Image: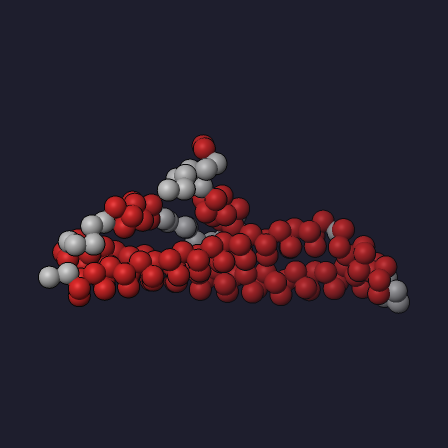
Length: 152
């Protein structure tokens, strides 16, 4: 199995993405219990119908949660993308209204543009990671659901 906390005291890569993005969000990100559900899934006996059913319900609930959070993050990400374009354009025009390439070069080094890009990147990375988690949870849910139908 892959390491649970490859970054030692910082946790795992998902935790780092949450920390990076959380400063741009006005909601909390709560994933306490997620690792335990994944561990339960990894250790589950496919012959135990009741265990598979309970696990399927937990996986489905986590999938719904990840989907909801991902939708919110996507909205924030799209707004951040819009802001990034606006700030970049304003800085480019401010530096040089007539020479587009000179304005672009200046805008790409402006601290406000860099900050807008960093916000957009943090939100996009977290969004992509949430979608990946949701995909995993959906597949695990269907496997557990299938186990409840096949086990007698």
